[in-house]
Image (cartoon, rainbow, N blue to C red; front, side, top):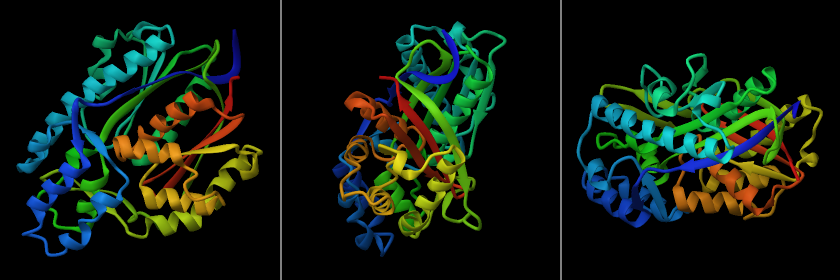
Length: 351
């Protein structure tokens, strides 16, 4: 049966094989930075306070102790992101009872590496995509892309009733680790970010795990310096302002209120927010902003502990756990990203 309601038909996750324990990451960072960066001893507690136990990485820990330039990093990105694309997408299609030939449109988000042709084209033959598939590769949305890209895929599905839309999010944040960057943002990134991928199938046809009710975004004025990349011959370098948690606490509720309002909804209509766990302080800021009890985002903290901040796919890891725990009648996925921006997608339980 086909209706004008877009359903989340399936969801699957994937991670690279290498695992870095947070204790190992802290010890290695101390060995690499303590003698060269006087402020490191003041920053070292971030490894213990980040709420992270382990992370998955594109390369083993030893790889990150050696210098690497742009070519090394993008070679690693092309190899590992391609494998994760296939793993997550194939699993999502299998769970939907589909194969690559059934896909009418693929939306791919990634902001941690560059390949041209894009990942979807590189993996098209391996996935068995048809020659008439519509491809939408998206770069630059950062952590918000898990929600923004999901919204793009949902709108593609709504615009083509019955079409099968595959949404894939792949990020290899670890490849931005920099031995040469003796800065607070680089140390924080070293303590926080991991690698992973997620994929969804969306369609107006058939049943699903949830119904997509609305999508929306908010772009904050004069905020370009809060989060992003600086790019040089060595690779990506993190831009991350200390002001992010207080900015989120002050501004996230008005932004989400405006997005929901355009869909005829209010904050009070949401039974659960499903948040991108950008970090412990950001989650605490969200709880304060929405008047929630400290520790409310327990699933988000669990994902952060097990995977770190993987950028865009992280919120989909949270969604997977919320679905397994029992999706409430109405939920809202939210994420913040460079721009600076907020993204929101509301879901209705299919039960």
